[in-house]
Every structure is written in structure tokens, then in C-alpha cells.
Length: 158
Picture 1 (cartoon, rainbow, N blue to C red):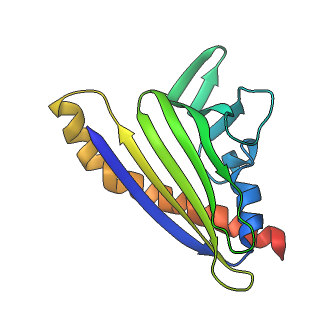
Picture 2: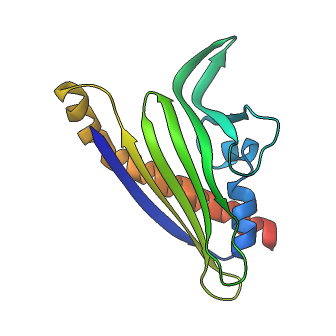
């Protein structure tokens, strides 16, 4: 089964400030509830970065919750006249597929950030039924996280 989630928000801050906060992997726990991101590569920016995001808790070596391993496949920071794009590939174990964050200036000191996630989920009809019920909740959660990202950036640039 494939699921598409797409949402966005407007931020009263320059695109470069949004990008900086978006790509601060450790700082994602400030705007994505109950999530901790661990960078698995030596560097933390650019194509090829690998990371693991755990939405839940870590009990010693055992992750309890939703584990999302991903790799950065595209890294284009915003600049004058250029839209920023952060592309990731979710590697599992629970879902796989691409995700894209776009950060675009939309006026003096304003920008938009959008996210499109395409997930492939394993399982049959039972999983499809459950996921079908959860998609609206997932969409609201994603929109809420992006809004919180925006508020944090706005506070930082004041």
C-alpha cells in the first residue's frame, strides 16, 4: 500500500533560517513530538547523510516506537531566487519511500515550507484498513509539526 501525505505552512522568517532549523537533525525533537534523530554518518549535512529517527523511547539497545531510518538524497539550500529542497529516502523498517521538504521565499522575511511524503507500507488488507483510518491523523500531525517548526524559527529571528 502507498500513502501520500502533503502539507505546508507559511513562516514569518527568511527561507535560510527555516532551512537551518529544518536540517538541524538533533533539533528536530523540538518540533516533531516524541522524536529523536541520530545522525549515523560522520557529517550531518549534504547528500549521503544517514540518520535514524525514533518516535518513541529507547530502552537500552531496544527502540520502542516507530523507527525510521533514512538517507539524504538531495540537498539544495535556498538562496536568492532558488527554492531549497531536502530530499530523503526512508529505508524502513516500517515504511519506505521518498520525502521532500521545500523551502521557498515568498516575500521579504517570509517563506513557505512544504513536505510531501510517499510511503510504501507492507501488509495486506488489514494494514490498509488501519492506515486508511490513520492517514487524516498523520496529515494533521505533519501539519502541526511544520507549524511548530515555523513558530520556533519565527522566535529565533525576532
